[in-house]
Image (cartoon, rainbow, N blue to C red; front, side):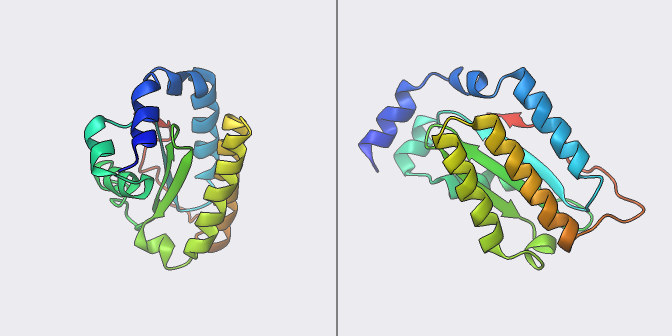
Length: 165
């Protein structure tokens, strides 16, 4: 457990994440997700979280562990083609994790997703929150179009609007 991390999370107000990603930003992200999902069979789900609860901090929960928890809780794995993808943003730690269901993981290397995460983190560090998120959605779109192109029947199985936690 790192005391500096706990202190940082406990001192950042919960409304801060809504200031970073306001209504207009969430609308832009939702529109980008909806637009990309017409070109591939992947289902993108975006979850943005501000400060973590004290219990998670005390346990030392990492961004990856939190993303795995949300992947299951949000049922991102529950798509017809096993094509769910979670983009999880931990704002206070400025960490990003992308989890892909087994249908996509079999075709797209984990290193590709990690590259998108690191680029988002660099954008976030520079204060380019929305630009970083939209660029990540665009990069994910390019990978999915190449490896998991749309078919005639391409249902929208997961919400397009980002979830603010």
